[in-house]
Image (cartoon, rainbow over all chains, first blue to last red; front, side):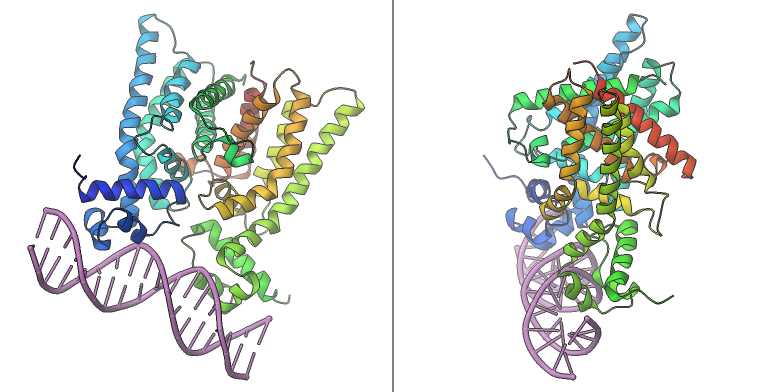
Length: 212
Length: 212
DNA sequence: GTCTATACGATGATAGAC
DNA sequence: GTCTATCATCGTATAGAC
């Protein structure tokens, strides 16, 4: 097995360190040391530390978005064939399951998704804008699909509820588990991930479908 | 009107700058300059930049927690007098309304609450731990109250749903409005704050009460 | 094109004079 | 309590080797 090239090693090291220590608390020097690369190589390949974060995000977020997009399309197509409106819970399942599954379906970085969760609410407008650009098309598609699923609700209300949904999901992916946040017994085995995903899907589906 | 002392001026300047630019993007030198104080005075009074953040948080979070605690007690007492279980929606109203109202009920820093939202998911364990210590008693009380309101649901499930609730609310207070996140028409007048709070309360109440 | 060595300004923190 | 001086470390930029 040959060693990956410098750019990939830098991405891997940055992903790992950003996940474990956060963006700010990770220095470029720590990344280049772990990647066995020179400090300037990071800026040569990515231009800046923020651009490196963007590259780390894109590498996994683009495939994830493709996956979520496909699953939403699948729900829409199946419903259309039956001449029915899409189901809210199925749409949420298409959106949430691939996201949370990312935490155990790991390529060596099961905690990558926490970087996404924190970028979403970053105080840095550059980071947030870049993240939003990546997910905006997906959110728009999901919003439109939910308007089909919930035709009796105003579009703006559905949008607000989708916003709350993203907050709940974002909170989940910021931590390795509820346990970490509330100091409960730490148990983060795959089964618990499934339970958490199902609990979250039940929660947001009921919230989205609430009477107006 | 006499000028506040150095410590207060530092707190005010830090609160304002952290709210607008985030913790990392604000330097101690910018804070001390705005506060007309010396750089070393910040470290003398607070010990470190992180400790300054903690002090900024505590100054407003402790009164806010007191207010939320009182309102939850009020719901519990009223229900107990009637011999009934507390109502989920009323508990959520007691928890959420004071939090979101903070954004317009400003003492010159209506955006302070966004610091809270971001501390909640901070990658820095020191920041997160300090925040958790501040809110843990309140969350425990709310959890117990919800167990009374939803006696047919297992305690652990209620806990998970409360976790989702905090995520949805935390997402709301990270931004000056949904508009900011999704580039919709920017309109953040007080009425919209009320609408958002009510929408959020409806959303999480339905999620908490969902069938198991 | 890739990468290394080196240097620059800015940052958080600290020691010690007053 | 306050301030000056100083330090190690940070992100970044550049010149030049391969």
